[in-house]
Length: 190
Image 1 (cartoon, helix red, strand yellow):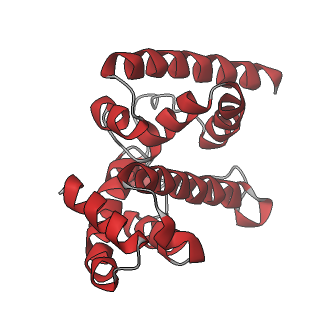
Image 2 (cartoon, one colour):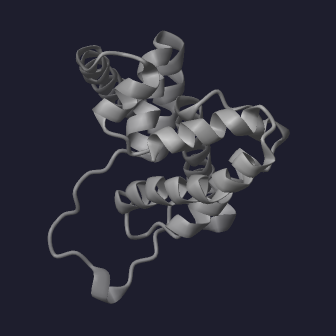
């Protein structure tokens, strides 16, 4: 299927209307898989549904004039990861605004945890740290986006980034450590 997606992306880029028509269902299915993977890791309080995330990303990817200028499968997945990242970050920022309840979280009586919840990385802190990482090491930032926001494995990300699996593992280890340090430093500054 990945080869078919790449073939259709290439054909659509060169103006093949039938390829563009065949591409739409494949892209939508791929986005649904990415969104389901991403939304599985989100907290229960998240009101954005996977379907809404798919539709937003789909519109951002296909609703622009640049949509038919993808340069292959890797470019598509990078664009999908970036679109989903932006949507989730925008949603988190919107929810943090005072008019939307600010820091308040709705808790149902039946949902009260008996034990302390697991600590979770703040999406806004991750976004800020990811922007800094992009300046320090663009490949590492792109790998984090592909892994965290697109839900790809290291092997899939290595293929898209045109890196060896070993190099991808080194970059992934570096990126995780760099982001952890940056997020912790920003948390202590507050």
